[in-house]
Image (cartoon, rainbow, N blue to C red; front, side, top):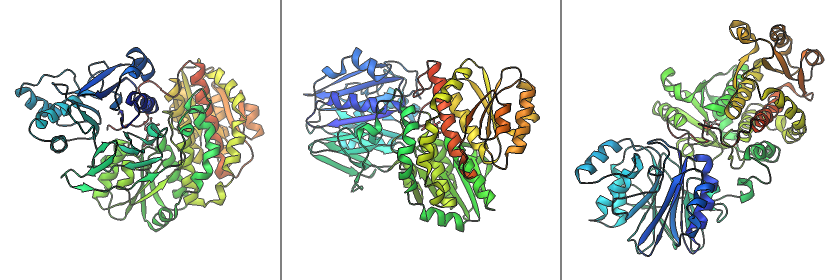
Length: 579
Ligand code: G6P
């Protein structure tokens, strides 16, 4: 998965591309490059590494020109290196493009091109697209050549391409199962994989739909479908400002986003759930599909629905088609903050084929899932840049609670989040106890279990410490063999009806020498703990919100104490657009 940015207008293209690429880095950051057209030639500069380093080394800013494209890469075909970095050029360097996605028939296309004398500089599927367009553009105008090529591609793509000989100075873009949004300026146009990359310059956008092609020039844009007929797409304006997509004074996006939760939660709570609530009430069976952090929110949803007698189950999206045969009576609910996760998209497409209705709970306006779902509920929590999901998780929980309990129940979340943030220094002290540990366990019961899973995932994602989470009762069925002197067990022990039994599990671990760290407001539990974070007395349904803030802060501080950049954990990316 990668990030694309394109610009045409009066500004120096290099400036816009560098700015956009910095905002897009969360989508992938193993290599980066730009291509800027000027007086019939296109200058391409690219290399392995992150934007800040590569753009300084190769002096991106010095490239003259008012039209260009840029790309930040996360390798799928071919290792991260200069040759495989985008943009890619045709043999004659007349067609240059940046691509996000996977071209499934690229080997066949590449072999055909080789028989026509093409040689390739990279191992990527993307380079093949540039060569294929160049093959066609000899005998037809750029738009036709672009269209013809797209019709020959199988797989997914977001593409931005420019042509050296194009006197009209146009950017040709396309999307299929990979995001691409146009940004509308005055006498200038932008395109990018997401909105924050363009926010510094405009607030008006056109999210393209799958199968769309657009041609951008300084004077405006036109959208076409794959058969070449012109079409219109809705313009949207967003009220995010640039600061909302930037760090706002915090050392890392993750910390900013943990702090942001108290500011954004009321906008989330205002989100419209009327249709979703009705569909859920009327459904006999509800399948919830999601991945990663969103799956944990999905699990919470299923627990709360099951507690109310509903037939509901949460599934890991990538496994859903192997397990379930949905039918027309099945309501599918997906939680996906990005709206672009490939595992989620394949699961919901599978379900839709069986005639299911689909509700999508997402944060990204114009994302692919919003075109597939029958009803969309937005998280309204502003862009999330840190790879580890934080505010989108609490926003997902808030939407779930609004559907299940109504708005009143969650009306004081903002205050609760503020109160929990005051515990940051205490959490930091506990983080110092954990940073050298190799293994760690989280336990909880009932609705604390999804939070234990989420706390564990957060910690392992960004601190690289091995951790697991269990319903407390499961410890004795295997995991207890791993508990020895000093092994931390984080116990989610609010005073709800799970506490008496969970306390027994705490004792089981303590007897074996575990270092007990609890999140609790119970005196007995505090007395048995080596460390604890005091929870306020709350409506028991709300403890998950209080505890997850602590666990997010804990993961963050362990990560920072270990010298890791929590915004960019190794091997992980924010939006995973391959299955
Ligand atoms: C990636 C991210 C996770 C996220 C998961 C699902 O693996 O690193 O943080 O939870 O994708 O993403 P989604 O956008 O579908 O919620």
